[in-house]
Image (cartoon, rainbow, N blue to C red; front, side, top):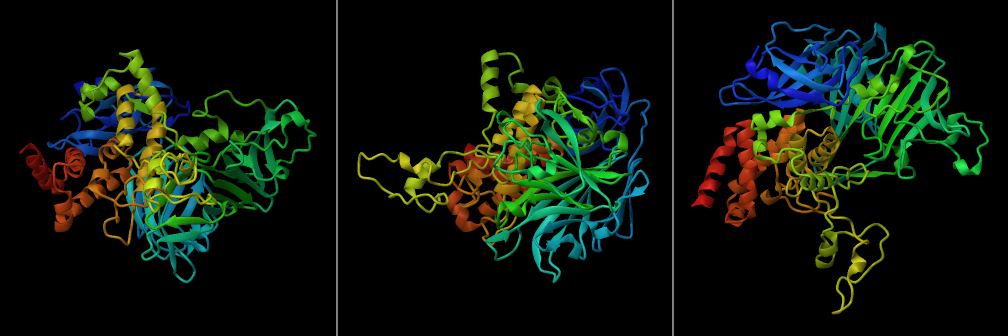
Length: 637
């Protein structure tokens, strides 16, 4: 056992008493030489129980030892879990295994059997839970955009993101095509299974990468599924307030049910009050109909059931869950929301969770709402939340400082100064709108100046009245403020870095969600995954209306926060975008005309130095070093 192992502590916010424990996934910094790739791991829980753990190296020291490690384990209790490298004995528990046979990737755990196919009409060739087949045909679970679907796709690629006895994570990449082979959108589908859990995580990521198409009109984007059930099915959901005393109850409806997150209500709600099967005559003061529900929906028969939940159901509106017969769909852009204009290069990813509970977990009757925190629900909701592991843990700040990770040894120790702590707490509360492509960003309020300076920079809001662009001297200009599109911040000055640094400094798990939303927004929306225009292609335009309606240049590229988020979360997309921004910087300064414009004692070089230095430090990629050295020599000289 390594002597430094006793100091590496992961603080877990909550656990689950199930034998496999609640999935926890957390990036951990390690001192040079403490661990080599392939070393065995375990964690010691607060009560002294030894738990198996798995690790995926994220960054390495020059000597090859692990610098950042993504640690995965199942937590059965909250509190400090101590990481142990090369323990004398490794505790055992049910495992998950991955094998590949002739283009078929087979995942087997103690609860699930799944086959992921590289070719054919369906991504999933088989899905079996507790020995019971759940899909009738390979195409019964598919990604769809309008009339295009993975059902018509002939070939796709599969990448292994992680494979350990505790956790298997694959990434499937392909195209959503129509019956005649016309491609509408590209996609990546993350598939994740943990040992011991009858649940699947599907990260649904769609992209507009179509050449020559500035914007694509879309009516509906969804994960559609048809399940192997008896002819008589029912839909299961919760009515949060039922009867004159507003207690919650389980509803089992044999008819069609839809649950929506839209802009009419502040909570998930049933689309049609008739779906509640509620015949109570409510008094006016209870504000009927009482349609509020939770963010999940199940379909089942007398013997088996399947449940579905969408991450960020409210935060990334609109969303919709709908079921009829044996079908169950997660609509990431509902047809009921109107058409979506998806700009070229834009993407969006939302996790969808499937769960296959036993009959003992599917309750009935009427009961008061649980007072348990939403992070640790019970029953069906617990299964659906199990694999949403972001934000369950944080590394102890003292250990981060001990490892000198991202210069945290110089940060103010948490709790040292009350007034500064109060200010910092308020600064990391971001006012983010709960809309599909805006959540994770903030309004820069630049529209108050840009709108008057240049009409083309900030388009007016739909339906806004025409106003003069210039006023006589002494006339007010405040009429501009609410008539034009907001100018979004687009991670200006790297708010992702500020959030990640505060998380490392304090170990406050509640910061995780804001950090995740901000980082994922930059990855999915601000970064153009494709553009017909060379200098926008695979770059992040500066702060602008509709996020990406202006130019892209090195003074508005930031990688520090993305790399910190990658090390804390293991999110491979964050590393991909950081490397792409580094390559775009090399391309900018490799072009003679642009180099002549950018080169000078200015912010184009200043921010580029930080961008390249962070990439060299974390990734060790040699291609970024020559330009970095040249810039530093120029600035110092």
